[in-house]
Amino acid sequence: MCSGRIDLKFILRAFSNGMDGVFIGGCHLGECNYVTHGNYDALSVVLLCRKIMEHIGLNPERLRLEFMSSSDGIRFAALANDFSRKVKELGPLGTSEGIDENRLKFKLEAVNKLVPYIKLVERERLRVPVKSEEAYNKFFTSDELNRLFNELIVDKLAISQIMLLLREKPLSTGEISENLGLNPSEVSRHMNSSSRQGFVRYDESEKCFALA
Picture 1 (cartoon, helix red, strand yellow):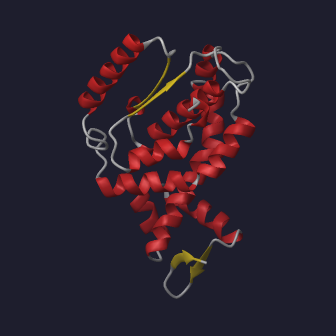
Picture 2: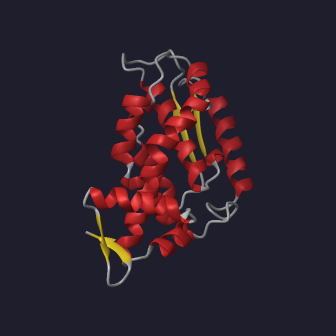
């Protein structure tokens, strides 16, 4: 299977199912058998996913992408062993990060619900025009990427988490703020936006928000 077939959902599903690490192998960059150069798509997905993992509190070193050919059996074994050692050092998923199992599942579900939107954003706003590993790494560690990530993904992820909370029961701004560790003014901004779009409603009698 071409590494370009790797979908963000696949990675999230692995972590949601309790995998402590995810290793992806692809063809050497510049040696793709297809005109699509899917290994660059895989690189973009992995770099963006690592950014998302860091944002939700997971160690991004739990996700690794390596490029190799079919003749690199010895190198593959060495890389796989090295990754296994690293994952063992990190410990069970969420443990070293201080995230309990239920909170981790909640965060991953919130990201998973945004995958179609994130894929669109990645395609339209986060594509690197130059096909080189150096250019991709440089862009995904740049201030410009941080700005776009905060502008396009962080707020949407907060709203996704809020929607999941409200699916369980109506909550006040303060309760949402406390549960997610967000500033109350941020929560108010998100709720006002969601209310205008018809996603939530405010119950005056209960002084709380509920799904519309």
